[in-house]
Image (cartoon, helix red, strand yellow):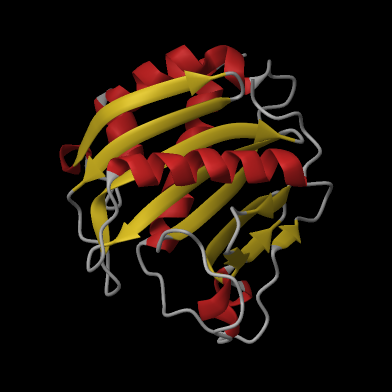
Length: 214
């Protein structure tokens, strides 16, 4: 696998997710599907229990896609619908993997090093400025790379907290990067955010018929 090629794909995935997540509008719409199947044999995106897809802020173009998930109750405007265990916004960005590349998991250590570099931190930043990002820690587990970080860049009208967790997986030949964002007005502790990140990864595996992590 060419790590240089994968860096470009990963930077694009994170930049796409953050650009869209930084300008999240209030949840709306009567329909709140539990999952969405992407076109062109792409992965199915699903979140943890209580999270649903916001179709008004989900878009797909070719093999690239951005999906935003929020509280099913909030999206459906139905108090009887199940709510998630923690108040958060989840995003998933999907990009194609490099043709003929080895499984992404084989390069997780190199990718970890990349995201600690100036170029990598710039890719993680909401503003594209490496100076706003501090990588707190990374966790590598089988098919999943988790990154805990803080980003001091402005988050738009709907403020999210600086600390967040990102995940990186490969599903059905696509790179899936996802983000767990707590709200600045109701921040989450890092343990809860990591739990949501792991639950998000588990939901993605289940939706796509993959084996649970060991």
